[in-house]
Image (tube, rainbow, N blue to C red):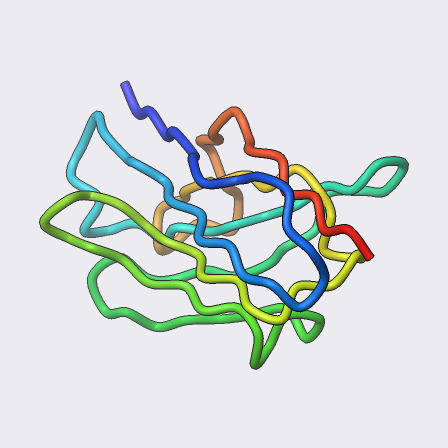
Length: 119
């Protein structure tokens, strides 16, 4: 059974940095894409970034390009999201998710980790 466990959230001042991690287990993820999503209070969940586990292709939402970096550590089966120059509008619950490379739907989700950016 696939398990995704996020960590690294917290409270930070605007302009600061946080690093989120997602520990993945339960299968070999070589055919998977790992993604980060976020949901702010009263808003719909939105895509943040993704990375192909094998090929390393990355994609970012326009709102985070140049500030966030997604990476993976194959040896540790973790996916990281380095968040720099944080803004109050980045405040949200951040979720790790995964899908097969040839599917558009993310099938497995973590429980989420809270990120709060104070102004």
